Image (cartoon, rainbow, N blue to C red; front, side, top):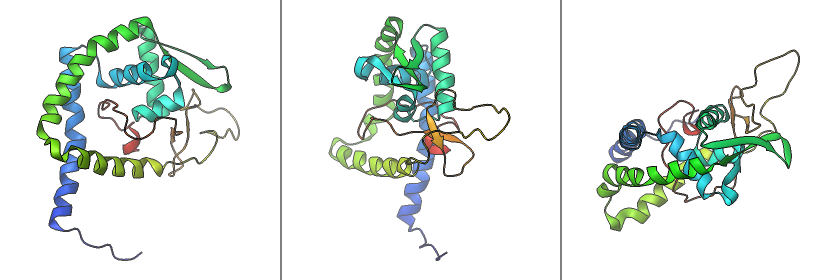
Length: 212
């Protein structure tokens, strides 16, 4: 392996500031949403993504990708939302291996009521600190890094698990993922989200795709 080029002082500062942001921002947004709206940021992210989806429904794989969670985490989040009648989950008519999550009328109301609190939080925590003239460059830089990270999880297999013998617990019960490059975890298959969507930041967790 070739000797890496040492970081310049400016590069080192950038990396450290990104690290501080990644670890600190989700906690502050989570506290803001829980205190003002009574809903977890991750739950709100799922509701908003479903609200903006065609027919207000998505395959679990696409939902996991757009929210930025692993299949096992998105399954837990959606199952929790089901118990509160905010979403439903059922088999995908076009793919019996996959499930589809859909927003309920109660979920639409919850998302609509929480939206103003989310906007107030991100304006206070993020947007007021970014000069308008640097907004486009900030979006471009962050998008490049995010796209490069997520592209590393490109399609590896059609299905996340291979049943070899005996019985084993399936961490991807909804058919939402594929093997990670590491080979020991199932990750979301990329859906139809695309670059540039304004998706809320999920609460900090090792189940986020970017930290697998």
